[in-house]
Amino acid sequence: METAVIYLLAYALYALILISLIIMLVILVSKIKKHKKIGAKIYAGMIAGMLSGSIITVWICSHRSCPMINDWAFLGNDISTVEQKYEKFERYNKREDGSGYAVLMTEQITGREMYDSNDYSCYNMEFDQNGKIVKVYCSRPLGG
Image (cartoon, rainbow, N blue to C red; front, side, top):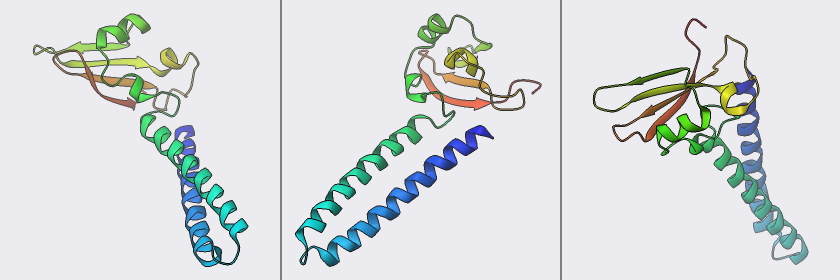
């Protein structure tokens, strides 16, 4: 539930910024010829809104599976590098062709317990034949 609330707040903030930018653009178009000082303030507000929207967009894209874990820190990395950093996988399976998957608990990555046992607390990483991580996602633990 905590994850849904974090993403809901991020999307709500994103929508608020977008609506604000549209309103500022309408005001700018209607008032720019009459008052140049108002136009400068609106430009500054639009730039701040675009910057905030860009930051939120990057955060949402990089934290798709879990709000506390940056997926981009894992995608494209070698699975052996991740194993050296976190020492022990919860589950690890390597197929005959060299591809496979590995699972870490979210507590191992963040350093603190994040979820109840019923929540998504397993961080799954799928890797290709070369050992490069190509997909990450969160799931519930077995039996959870």
